[in-house]
Length: 119
Image (cartoon, rainbow, N blue to C red; front, top):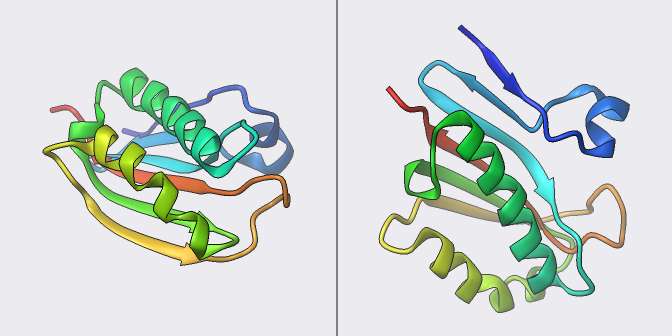
């Protein structure tokens, strides 16, 4: 069974994707950007959106097994570390950070996660 979760974000309809898909025992959360004036604010905002998708799927950040971070400037990643450590706490997932362009230059970080789906 495949279950799709939409957050109603503007890009979902424009591009043709959903915020998360529950399938094969996992919750796959799409790359997510957040709002804010700097990378830390955007990081927190993206995590809130991701957290809501996980919650709707019946999962939490403790269930996340993989996270990918995408930033146009790798030097901006370190200021996010405390937010990420607070979010994942004692349950850190495998992680990768990639420096690349994002869909719009105003975005400073995009985050995508994979979590175990509830049994």
